[in-house]
Image 1 (tube, rainbow, N blue to C red):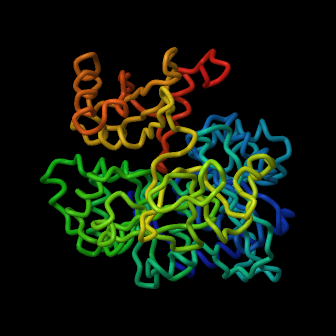
Image 2: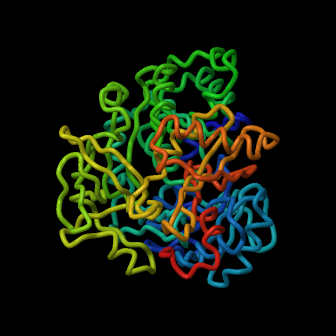
Length: 498
């Protein structure tokens, strides 16, 4: 792997040796198969050796967002039951606060330097042998949901005692379908503490490919890296597409992107016009997948398929997609309902039996809580997350439609649409917009955006008012923490039924 900005890199031989040393250290510190390790670290050369050490000693590996507060990060460390926290010198302030809040932690380690409560990772593993541990056994991810609709929950699969070469079923499917091999050069522009960047980049490493990791996403730097390293594969989110499309034309045209064979996008809905512009620019390398950290199933669609099924997220690649109505019955093609995957593996939301139960129906099918429909050919179309559906005067309104329109307005960087209280209709449609220039924020731009939306959609789907924010609470994985915005407007309301 190579760090994009610094140029620091590590070979497979070096990574293998350091992974083995890390595994011996974990064993020496009493970590046993089924134990939990938490990692609070920026994108860093050492991130992968900690990860692979955990994966070869049978640990549950929980990465934590570096953007969380000490209380939020400590909640995850405590909830997952981590016995060890690994961090970095750059994160020392936050890591120190987290450790102080988590008395159950037996060990703290940090890359780059030791500090109070954290021993030096590099010095500690240097004292260990570079040969494999004798009791190697495969570990598991235990990712935490983003908390877009409440407190984040750990997604846990039963400990399986797998051999260390065993990939998660969903990543096996992706690795084969996306043609990862030892010639793959994969550019990872997002934080490694998110499920997709970690899952896809480590799958490439398993197949012998090279991983280029950006310390932080920058649209112009991304294009330059594709040309410099002749990148073949990448995984992005729609907000990255938007930022690249808004670069000056001369910057967009400056770099040779012809090496790209697969630019996978996921994590959030992509406006149809944005995707069309990306295909026009990059060609048919654009591929979309729909799945979740739960690993319960997935769909996939190529550029060629999408051009004849605009707006779809594809057909089932793993397990079977089912659309279920409010009455629990299967819906026919074209009818909207809750999306389920039939044949999914069993998972649990850690320490939340009720949430786990709600994710499965009587047939054992699982859902991520999303709403959509299938066409006659089995292509899936998302309409929204159930939690964000607006019910205004008895009419169901899916915010994704107006968000997709407003995102394309030339004065808009980001937008969130949701329901706010209305005494007559129960809810009304509200948009919160991050403009390119906050100096434009005001009544004139509000009127312009409402008119723009109504020129493209039925008026009832469009916001009745627009507020402006300098920055929306969107994480680097592309997911918008809409709850943080919406809750402001529902403060003091006992329920969302008026």
